[in-house]
Image (cartoon, rainbow over the protein chains, first blue to last red):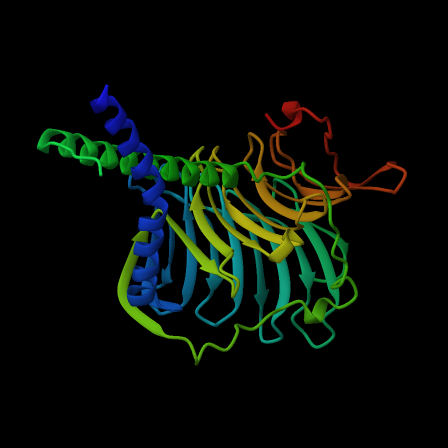
Length: 153
Length: 205
């Protein structure tokens, strides 16, 4: 009986002590090892199977980017800066081909949205890269014939 | 004073150890549940809080990083983790990179008090998305790849009602482009092409 009581008391004590112990450890670690800024060349987020699912880093030419991978390891979402420093967000299909691109373009840094199929532009809209920056909206049929809804592109 | 034998001391220490282990697993379970809740942060539920402050000021809708010269830095060559959080000054996560319980991955940015959110990532079905929304995800702009054609589409929703959708057809061969919009009374206008707006996913599969 005394053994059981001791065991029960011990478990309860352990449970009560744990949060304080953890908190003390966390605070100690925070104080000594967790800086306000952590700088790194690259960061990988891995899933429970150790597969890389998100990568924050840079391209070989030094442009920053974030890549999201699907469960098969294919890049499905990518954002960052192109080599000319134009920002972009790209959504890919399961062949890693871009299907939706939101980016700036040209010297005027005009915003453009492009939708693609099998690597071909199918719908493009945005502002022209010239000084007027007039809006445009064009699309292409399956044969590649261009149709203008408004504006010039 | 309670007098204990050597064996009884052993039992007490073992039991305390068991209590510590139990508490640890309980904490781990709570963390796992939090991660699971992330994966369920899909659109179309929870209450709405609209933030219209940027409505007429699109040019100002970009931010620069805060000044960090006073903060202590640490550098490492590379990092690998199951989760990354950027904390606000109050210690709450304002940016989070995480893997959901359903194996979706995402980047979540949330304003304090959940008044707005930016989310992007890859759904459990491997389809990517980018969304800017209010905290309740009832008002948003959403770019995603969807349907059996893996088509790019963009959806604008206000007060949990779709007001405009455009992109490439999600089921038809040739993926013809479409653009439909809805007036406040729900009337549908097909500006370009056609779009099936059944609530079930019969129009996308």
